[in-house]
Amino acid sequence: MEELMWTEGQRLRAEGRMEGRRENQAKAVIRLLTLRGLRVDKQSRQRILKCRSMITLNRWFERALQANSISDVLEA
Image 1 (cartoon, rainbow, N blue to C red):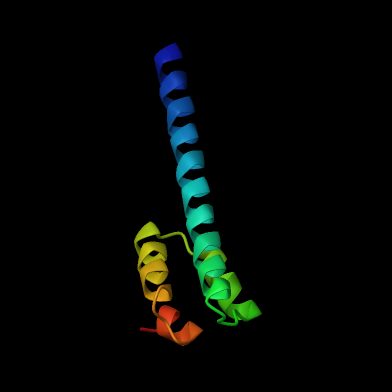
Image 2 (cartoon, helix red, strand yellow):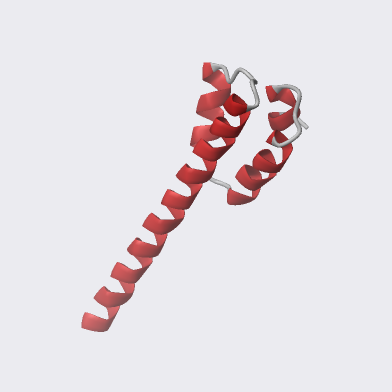
């Protein structure tokens, strides 16, 4: 029983770490867009912050490096 509890605790910590990474990456996308002078409207900001896919967030970050508009990032 103790082993199962430990495993559950480890799983919860791992999920917490992953959620933190996703949150940080979403904030990084928004910050990069803002620093590049692109306006991030409320709807786009919420879409980025609610995204749960690291693959998508990483793709958006890479697109944000060269994007001319928010749609270049989210819709490409």
